[in-house]
Length: 206
Image (cartoon, rainbow, N blue to C red; front, side, top):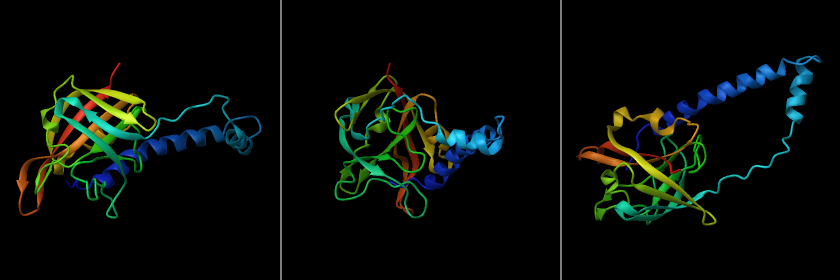
């Protein structure tokens, strides 16, 4: 499965919030009676007394409704700027978590993205039945160490690859979300790939 142009779109979707944060830092640096330089130094030296535990990286994905139980590869960006897809000898049977620029760990606020192939020349692949998911179905992400983040499917949609909903899939959110992505629709024999993407949208279960 190839998700065309997603790498460039991921960066475009994440650069804007970073620019806003830079603007906040610029505002802080101009405040204070001692002038801009002193204010900037104070901000640099600030350390919170609170401790924060980072969310463990995802290790497995389980979707009982469609019989999926798979380890997760760590995916980044390919050299051409597109999002990597699962690779290696077991790439057809293994899904992958996007951990590249702007990537979110499942369970953290934001949109975590997991990709998987739909089929191969020898038969169905790990996300072959993704299109069968329905609202209310359960998705479990097993984290390193054994903890679980449980998600509930909100909807499943199919989009032409040329109109991939980048903002809906990758844009930051205030609450933990999960997006499962594979190929679907008509197979383009000339291009050697499917014309569409099937995307399952899920929210963290209460």
